[in-house]
Length: 130
Image (cartoon, rainbow, N blue to C red):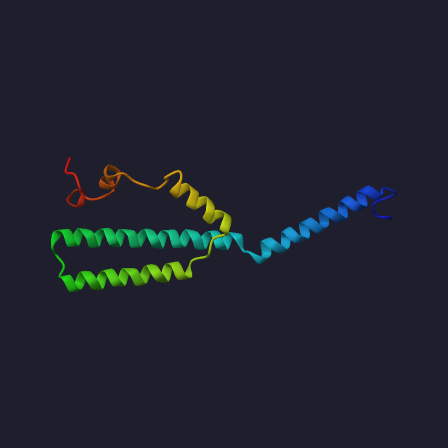
């Protein structure tokens, strides 16, 4: 008790805080949180690129510039690329998955009306030609 003087409470509090900080430090070192966040960001960028490639494919299909076999090959190639991205992406924790499911299903976040979808597409691919 020479370090903390005569106060037993300070010694106990310091020991508890030291234990908590040791656990927190171990957790942070074990789960490279910034690295995981970067992997999620990289996956999002790669998935965005796949989405844009699908949009280009739809545009080419609509324009009639691809043969049927080429369409199938390009679709299959995009599917393989997307699988690679998902396979290499970090997994999410259950709580985050549950919250995302709730946001998508119950709150209808990231659901789009036909008009909103049309706004994302080139004029040639839109349902309505307003």
